[in-house]
Length: 281
Image 1 (cartoon, one colour):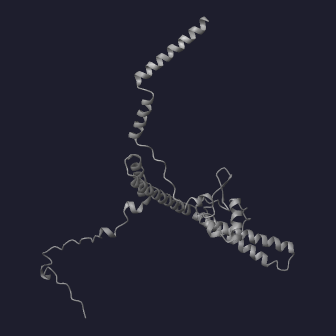
Image 2 (image 1 turned 30 degrees about the vertical axis):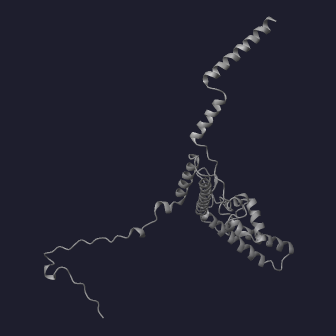
Image 3 (image 1 turned 90 degrees about the vertical axis):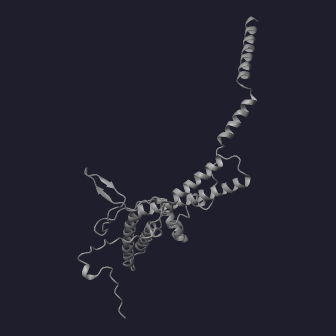
């Protein structure tokens, strides 16, 4: 069944006399728009929450004990959430910064691994020493691939094969591998660099089967131990009124200004008399 055409508001014979209405742009509802600033920036919201809770605890000495305990607990929770958000943001920034360099290192290491395996297959009937050396090359090449993949994401990446570019003065400047990797078959293989301690750790984790934990930063010791604990908030400073009260109480113990001056004058006279008696003796 054909659809019915809409009934025009203007008769076709009067189209030349009546101007057409301008088309209005359809507006989306407010709830379908982009995220608000606070939702897109949860770190700022958490910072303001922590700041307000600390001010509340510092400047209100008359809070009931149950309210103070509740606010301190809320402060610890907000501080923990803020630390987690900042850690996640740092991790995301680190991944984006070193993604390209890690990709090129993985490509170079994969080429070396394929070449080493091919060389090992060609030595099936060769000498034992040559086969052992070729097997060691295969193992090292596999560790290089694991190094580029499972290097901890929370740490600044140290390239295995940084590229070298000639400067204007003719000197070689080492870069961080931002250029496209050269074919190793055409040129001599570059010497492996990177972090030697991390390379050895990757090798150990490959034997233990804990490479994923290393990549996610679960084997970094103290950095991982503190992530799952609620940190206690920083000690709040006593309020201004309380500090003034303590100051006045301390002043009462020593007397007012007039009494302190009189005591100082009496002590000075006694010391002068003692010195005169000792002189004439």
